[in-house]
Image (cartoon, rainbow, N blue to C red):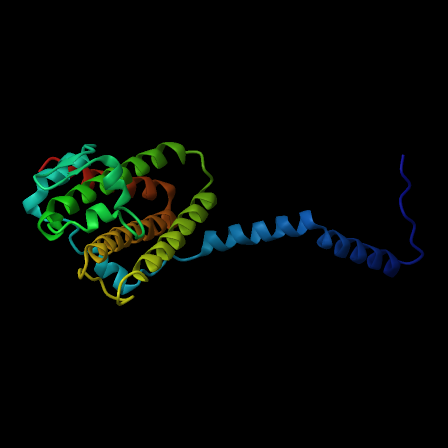
Length: 234
């Protein structure tokens, strides 16, 4: 059995304990555990974000028009090919139009691009909505056992990533604070900005709901899916 340390005075014993605590604090594992504990507490108490007004405004803009609603609905249901008189777009083409420029030249160089932008935007709108609904359905299932604070941290990380992606997209436009439709590339970039703006607003709503309770978050996810899916039924 180990022998307990002997101290000549009570003050010597207190000093030895202070030294021991300082040594423990210097250990990487202890410091990391303390940082992680502080981080989790921070996200537990952090208030929901205030979405920038420009993002809210862009999120409210229409991504497609009612004239092409049937195309939107088809792609919301999972269709993956758009056949027009002027061009045929397969899934690979459609996916290539989502995200950052440059976009495929064989599409952006089409002389008829402005004439076919209506159905293309409807296809993109439907495809992006279809993917988002799938992601939320997956979250409802896979996050059921995720601790509340971990879910808050994940949502905040998503929010920050979306803001960064949107800022990068805006940097491709002539004016980094305004949407632009001067060229096919600008038009596609602006559509992607509007979509990311919607995702930012959605994620901010998710964070606010999670600040109340997990049940509120699940409820807002289910309600949002119903609202988006409702587009197929009207």
